[in-house]
Image (tube, rainbow, N blue to C red; front, top):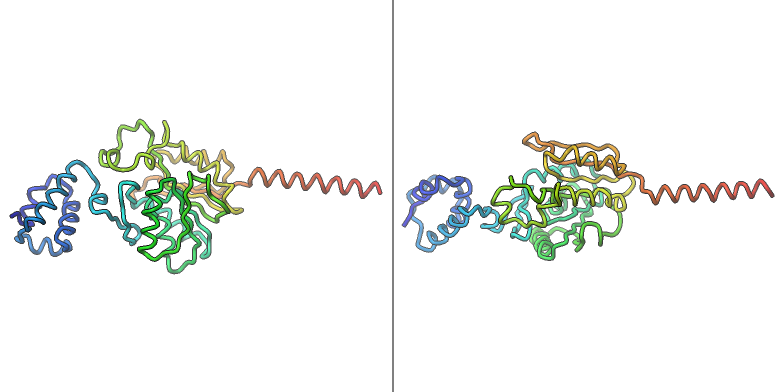
Length: 295
C-alpha cells in the first residue's frame, strides 16, 4: 500500500494543498498529522478512495466539489456543482455590510447560490440584520436552506429571477452576479467545465445581468439605500458608468486583496415614480391655491 509521503511525492504535479485537503479527508487527519506521519500506509479502501479523488483532480474538478464543502467567512458550507464555489473576493460584500449598514438593516443577498453572503451576515453576532436571499435555481435554494438550517440561522429565502418576485424595500442589496463574457477564452478549465454556466456567463460583454440589476434595484431600495455588486476586475469603469447613467450617487469601487478593482457600490437614485408623485402634488397644491385666491 502507498504511504502518505509516497502519495505526496507521486503527485507533485498537482497543487500540494489540494492533495493535502483530500488526503486529510480520507484519513480524517489534519495537515500536522500528515507531515508528522509520512510513513503511514493507507488501507486498501483509503487508497482506492484517494486514487478516485486524484483522478478527478487531474481533470481539474475543484476540490470544493470533491469534498462537498467550503468555508466562507469562517462558516462551513455544503457545496454542489449547482452553485458557484464561494471565493475570498466575495467576502468584500460581507465586509461592506458589516462596516456600513445599520445594525438592524434589512439586507437582500440577490442570487445567493450556496447562501454564503446571507449566512455570513445572519451569523454576525453584533448585528440583528433582517436577511433575505433569492435565487432562480431550485437546487441552489434547497442547498442554501440546508446551509442555513445546519448553521441555525434565520434567513428568508425567495425563488426569484433577480427582482421578479422580490417584494418590499431593503437598506442594502448585495449581489455577486454572473459577469464573464460568453466568448471569454481565458476562463480556467476547472471553472468552465464544472461550475454552473448560469452563474458564470452574462452576454457578449459579461454585463447583461449587471445592467438589469442596476436598473431594477432602485425599486427595491429605501431612500439612500445601497446596491453593492461584485464584478470582474477589468469591468470597473463600465460598471461605474452604468451606476452613473442610472442616477446612483456616491459611486465607489473597492479593491480586493490582490489590488484589483472588484466591487462597486452606489446609493440609490431618486425614483422616477417619486418625482412624478412630487410633481403631481405640486400641481394639485397650485390648483388649490389658485382656487382659494379666486374665492
